[in-house]
Image 1: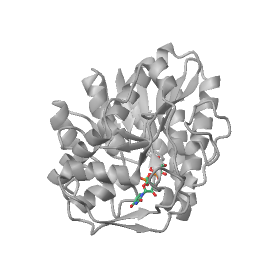
Image 2: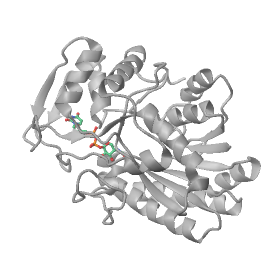
Image 3: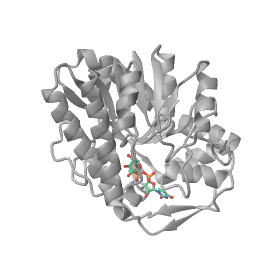
Length: 340
Ligand code: WQD
């Protein structure tokens, strides 16, 4: 299939572009580079061994989005594009609602006008909110999120489900990611947060490469085995494979729209991840324990049964694989992707 990947220059998008090409699909990318670098295209083309067309514009531009669908043959869409920083969304709610919702509306309207009926959407475990029983299961009905970012995911899941339900032949997979980490085995692409990393793994990686002085562990007094929060960390290469599996499953999906957890089903603590990274680097890394971060839940992980049985997808890579691959990327690219 010819697949449009929105946000294909981003962390998960770029890994998914490679997985789609490896699975024999034709890929084109649209990305406004608001949270990624144009140099990603060259890295991807080098790894894919073929040209990968990039269209540099913001999907909220309805005219440019229409022109893309009018001029390009598109069979399916994998939709990553959107603002994704939880903390920033609390400070900039309108920007998050405007960007994440309007880009999805423009995309869905262009798909409708041009008869594109297959969509894989990048959702998040954050939609389970703070009260869902662990492990999280897709049939949990009280979706919510404490951040505007998470709320955009709840809303977009609902919008796409309603559109799919009334649109002849539409099939939508809503992929709820747990905690994506790691990097492509080549070390050529990986997570490259702009500014101070919000997330644990890239922060540890920047401590290891000397860009940050030490890790601050946000609280060690949680009701968990070692007192630090536990999360379901998932290798980005496994996550990318989940997108290919979902895309190729759409025709067999009975429902117009269906959610799938993409996780390992296992929780790992902050300190356990730090120790695994120290094994990858071969030395201890400096850290201090600080106060809890507002909004953090003590522990959650996925029930991945639905993706396992219906998509035939399983996470295969271990926490040590995630750290080894992250370290290869970070040590070879201490400052992330070059600007030009
Ligand atoms: C993991 C654990 C922190 C940084 C977030 C988003 C979620 C999704 C994935 C988009 C927590 C602790 C972190 C640090 C620390 N993103 N930590 N020191 O919060 O589980 O999920 O990213 O979909 O929506 O909420 O991931 O990596 O930020 O934190 O101690 O410097 O690491 O307190 O317990 P989180 P995270």
